[in-house]
Length: 134
Image (cartoon, rainbow, N blue to C red; front, side, top):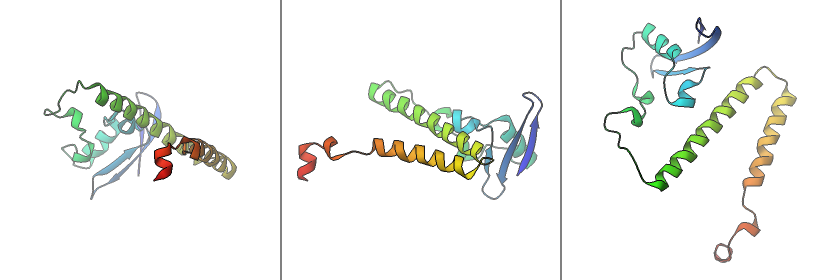
């Protein structure tokens, strides 16, 4: 783990780099939120002699063979995917904040997620007659 102080935003970030697999993460989570590598990760890759961006961090949309889609159904799916990505970012940030909190806070967050998941799970009333027969 490397600790990097960013002079521009005056914050400290933790960057984890695994040389064998070129797996890298940063606490700013720009890649998870936007799909773009942050300057902190690029700095660590460069200082470790990595001159090209590892394939795992090349999103298809940034490649020259990416195709523009105009299908409304695909746009709806992409919009949902964007919202899900934002949700994951919120969850990761919240879990990160919980690292320094009490066990009660962690259990409380788990309870909130568990309660919401139960609201999302289908009930017998939600099933159609066709589904009940099967």
